[in-house]
Length: 133
Image 1 (cartoon, rainbow, N blue to C red):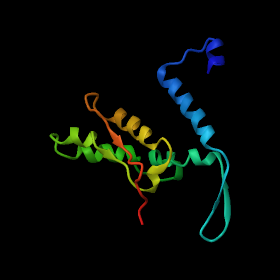
Image 2 (cartoon, helix red, strand yellow):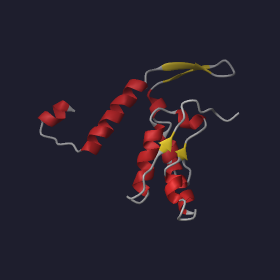
Image 3 (cartoon, one colour):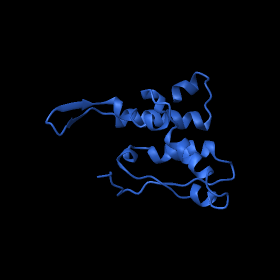
Image 4 (cartoon, one colour):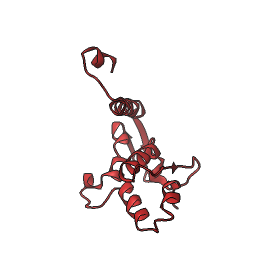
């Protein structure tokens, strides 16, 4: 990013954060081998950082459905106005799909963009959350 700044490009805080997220994803996307239950070994690399995107954009796999952040927002908006503040302040992630790196931050960012500015969004992702059995 320093090189781009030297060339005269100016970045806002959001752009800096997005560039940092991309760089972090590259670091996390080292190639790893996984053995499937049938014994087959598959190699997964950079794709790992792209899988969680389907949770936010189901259209990437051809589904016409809202993303997880939109579903959360819509659910909260259907509740009584008196409890919405509490619900926005207690969004809890659970299950195997929520174990992707950065998912809590992304959920917070996307939900904040949908909610009214006066709402404080808190997304909790307990470190010992488990997958469904």
